[in-house]
Image 1 (cartoon, rainbow, N blue to C red):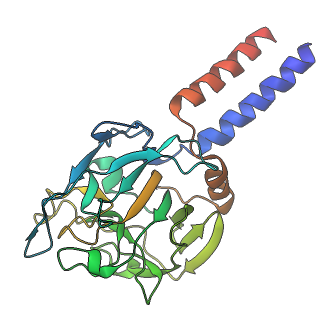
Image 2 (cartoon, one colour):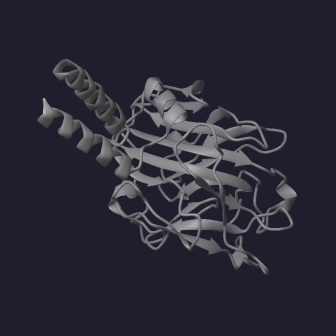
Length: 289
């Protein structure tokens, strides 16, 4: 019996170590499992709460928008991942003029010399004509002054990483994922190369970097009041994402390996309560031993 308990304890400790590793360096994690309400909470422990927002204008000069609605809670993608819910960025006519707003914080402002992003995406529409405010059609997944990820457009289905203050990092990061279906997206920077993964598989590598990280322009006078937006360009409020997003995560000072990204794709990031229960179980087994 003691031998069995010992084996179980080792197994649980191994599970805790493996899963806890995905939380190392985690700066923000929005699971979108709330199911209702006006807030998307950050499960990383860093307090980067998101506010569901319906835009009232778009572009520069601003174009008024009417009849807009906030993102809506929907069932999760199912299959891979751990979550039960997701967010739909759209309106009844198929277009979208809504987003999630996240205030600037130290945890998401400076990601350090290494960084990673992960999320589930279902893009439902890519028509440029449905984008208000003079948008180019490159729909924004995440956008803030220091970094931005955008999807390709009809005729050029390539995604871009586009940090405003870091021209060297403004790069084509390879083919956009399939429309109208859920897929897992990850982007990493390991100090020398940007790497994009779809469903755990390496899609694109952009190398030759010697930079230690992204420049911080978020504290500059022109950007100081800006926010991070999920599903829209932070300024001038255009190129809204049209579709659904789930389990968005940002890591700082860390580039996930392909093995870790495949684990993220297959299993997601465990909620803190799950980690706590596994940890308590391991401690109890250790005491029994």
